[in-house]
Image 1 (cartoon, rainbow, N blue to C red):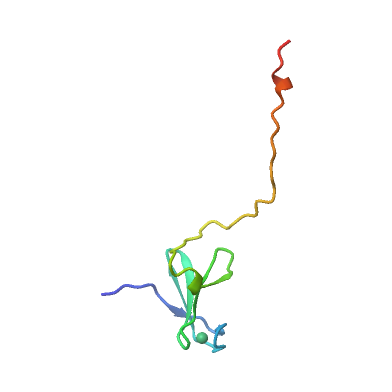
Image 2 (tube, rainbow, N blue to C red):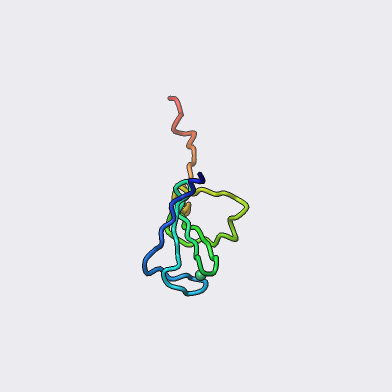
Amino acid sequence: MNQGPIKRFIAGAVCPACSAMDSIRMYEEDGVPHRECVKCGYADTLDARGNSVPKELTTRVNETRKAPAKPTSQTVQFFPNPRLKKKD
Ligand SMILES: [Zn+2]
């Protein structure tokens, strides 16, 4: 028996591709939520922040993003001060 992921229809969900209502099914693979439209075949993945990632972009790479990407704008610069190690 093929035990695939459990796919549930999302009540009230509208397909972003064909605008059909109640045609979106959702399921998880490796903890990553996926959506698919049973009417037009549109499929996407939701990343850790809940953003839609169209499946065309990630079909080749099975990416699992479990940790949310943090902005690395805070740069810590460390200047070693040789004077601190000065011996009297
Ligand atoms: Zn659709």
